[in-house]
Image (tube, rainbow, N blue to C red):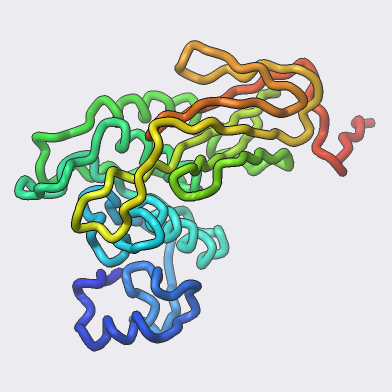
Length: 277
């Protein structure tokens, strides 16, 4: 069982904030769990992860002055993976509705629900748990259905091995951040991208950063020579890729999936494919 900050007695909470338990930085220690078992964790099979950035953005695990709730959430998810040597499957839960009927904060939107699903996948989730409880009068069925339908065909791609080929971009700072995942399957390169869009600030939140309406992002795919076309999955458009470089525009909460099928895919630098005898 993972205990929340609110379950930790006040004196223990102060210890969490002032002592170092092997996390870096320790003020972002996920849910104050580091001191509860001597800093050690044992897990079996898989780790379910339920922390909801929109309805619980004022919770101490996500309410910081220097990062928004989505950045804090993804930071925790990444450290769950790294702390377990990337060997244990993580199954994040998403709350696709209002947290409580009495909650006065803006509820999660269709766009945020869809974005959260893909951000979790891009950050290594092996499955998604929908947690449609509390106030079901605001349920984001369309976003859930859209993601579920896409995964019927894309699950074998995202669950495939990490390729030698890499993708980089120029959008890695707060309020201009796009996260990526690259995979290869059946002669095609797939690049999954999500703009980490912090929610509009509310007065009670410590983080008050405001996202621009759109950002322009430049991508570079290694080992790709000549011209190719990147089909943007589900959007009915394509982008020219020249020597592995292409550019696209991301609105708030945007998710774009690119499928590149080139006439000639060169091996990444330093690698050579040898013919079979």
